[in-house]
Length: 171
Image (cartoon, rainbow, N blue to C red; front, side, top):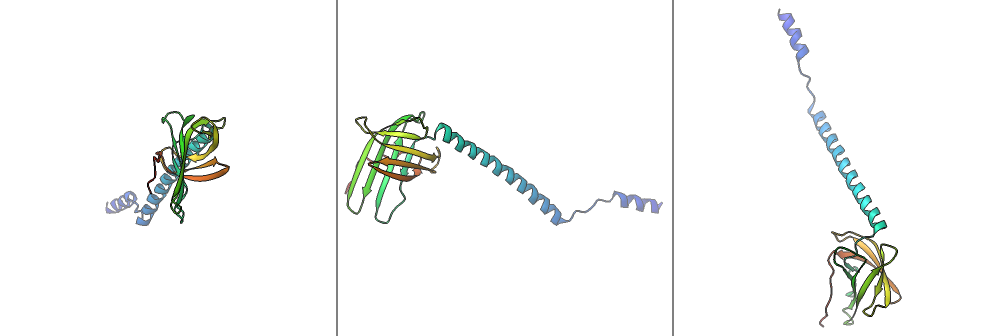
């Protein structure tokens, strides 16, 4: 009888999986989950970029050149009602700390046939330039705009989703 019990107990005996294999399986599942999350994020970002390129990105916020050693600054701010971006207000500011001079220009903008190109109109309604929004995020500070004004084109990164409007500088 004892021989039968020994053979029965050996056939029911659980197999022991080494600890390193269990860790490997957990790591594999974690990598699969991470890959799925990255793929979903990439797909969402790709869709957002394609939608923005065809339907237009939101033209709202502040774009400004990176800080330069001489203290000069060029800034562009765009305001709208937050719903439609076909038209709104703009302000360009050039500030030269070394020469203690500035100029401010402002007006309205209107959409063109290209959903990411806008015509800049001065306060009298005359065309004075254009703005080409290469890309922008509504919620963040990622984006780039190309402003053509006064015969020059400026490439500015987005620094804020909120428009920074300057009233006056004090020296």
